[in-house]
Length: 487
Image (cartoon, rainbow, N blue to C red; front, side, top):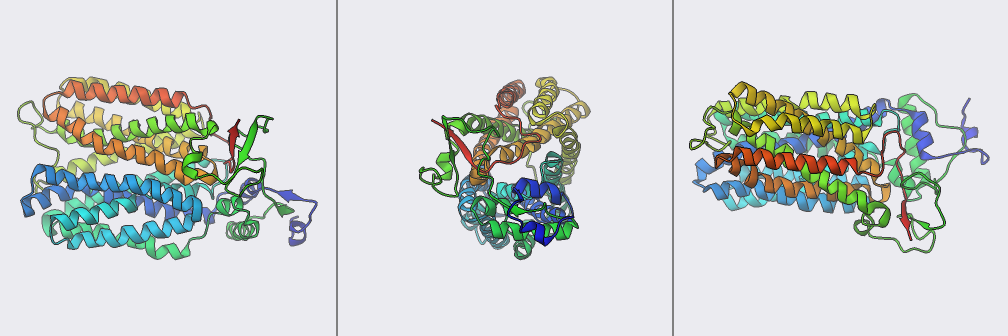
């Protein structure tokens, strides 16, 4: 039987991973999941709102189509900045500092957006909101660091459902609010989850893995003790010690390998910048492949979302196509967005079923294949039912890949650069998000449906090849803390 005396026995030692395995996944992690999920839901709502406020603002202020599009573009530009910035902050100053900063920025400026007096102020407020939204990877990395290896993929897939809940909730709110109360009320009400994330932040705690990495062993131990108490479990017997030999590929270091850690200069190597570290020899290949996957996933995801109304609308015929954002009063817009958002639920279930059974890479390859097959028939015109069904299936596969990539990426990067690595990959995805409307919608609107679908097919193939080339499978693999750098 474990006891406090056992835990102080210098002859018995255990690592953080062993402690997490003993504590298991219980009530404590459920509470962590609820908060991280709230952050993901708030992010999804603020992104989805872009599909609804543009037409209303355009009508009220007499904006051009270019000005309307800029409202969306600046948000993604802000997310590009934020994804990188919040990653660096949380890797260097702690996950809680990152979470607090994100919650403050997002909640304040999301609410202020509802009181924009003119177009310029709205653009500025929404860009700052975008910077806050770029912190999404911090929520996922923070949650991941509390989860034991067993069934980690399943729980990360469950975490991803909060994004889908946010998209469905926002579509429902828009359907109810805009025709009756207008876009300002939608902005104000949609900021409530952001404020909730700020208020509940004060109940959060620092990631024990972040503390462990930075040699704050006592603080990490105290959190593990609290986790064990809440989960009604026990820590292993002995003393928590640093796992100095953790490295990326979980192999013993060779004579040609050195170890880098944010703990400090343990072997005479200066503390590296986390941005430069993700380009170290042991991480460079997968970093570039992850960028390709994130770019392809974002491009495909937002492309299918934007094209759904183009291809399924009865008016989506050459010469008479209208933009997917029609008159705000047209309730069919909200209904269609709501229906297509539902497609994400089976995609999340599929990814949750596959990810811990066949692995991360195989899951992505399978869903890329089905997504490609479902998109191919859309090169030609079909009736609305067939078109909508194919798009529904394609979106299901794409969100599944989005989810699995979101599991693989933070699992791959060591703790010292985890949020930076995920943040930069997400930033690359945001570039795709900004490019996609210019390519996808314009091609379909210009009567080039075959070219648009062909482009998406090429992007999916390249993303699948990138996933196939991942050198590491993270299924069942413990999280690493130290970067292995080959000479």
